[in-house]
Image 1 (cartoon, rainbow, N blue to C red):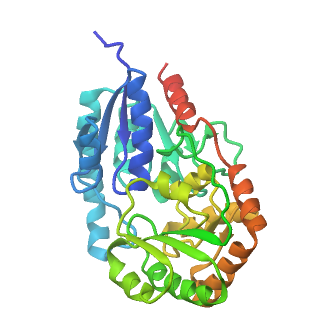
Image 2: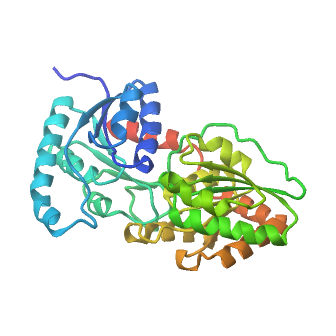
Image 3: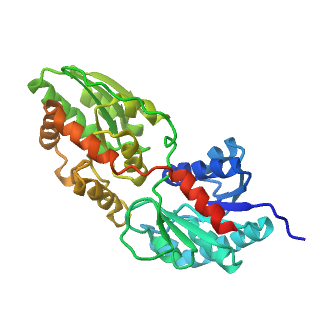
Length: 357
């Protein structure tokens, strides 16, 4: 006798960019009385995060293949086969109504197993171009949910946006202050060494030219000693943080942000309307951060600087222009807010439930 219980299995592992959006979806589905099982890896950060939320998790052994050596590539077919078998056992036992893949390397063996077991698959693509796994898996899926707009005429594609932790919160509006500017520097969850070197130099140069109170929160990652040395003897208020747990407060605090071009960061910027200087990580897979960022630039919603042009002089000039021209900051803020997608989590969950029926 088959149970009427609605069950979903979620695949997400490796980085916060995959895990936190998946958690937002999982929480909403649990509230709708849908049973959730997560497949991840024991070595990934998802193991602790998901367990702490009391979401049941199972593990497979698998890792990414891009940029790995010849031996890893030779072993890959065997690792993929093993991971697919592990996924088959977990999925068959759990017997979900549907499978949801939130991207990343783990999605490939899990989706292959779901396809073999004839479980409907929904994949979520965060970026403005498909990643390696999703570029293949889109052909096996029932629906493809897009985090950013990708031009297509395929009816299975649905542009709902990227789920974030801050979608349903009330955002405080900033009131501009005379001769005072707050700058937030975020290099991703691990920080960015080049930000730790270049930003303090640019601020030093800027401070000599502008009579402004400059306050900085700089998320440095583990290379904070570089930033500490660089900021020494600069007359600004500095708060160096290895990692920032809650981004809401710092997004609301800042007047300007210097950041990377990850899809989740960009989605959060559209919620908070922060005037942004985006320096895409140049070694991101398929240069997806640059392509994500250019979407904002085409809409006059951010300033994008190629990392090869990210110098002390260029950054100082860009910051000066933003600081002394509040109308430019206002325009950037208004334009990026226009790109915000509403009810992202609800729309994704509604689509999932629809595909279960």
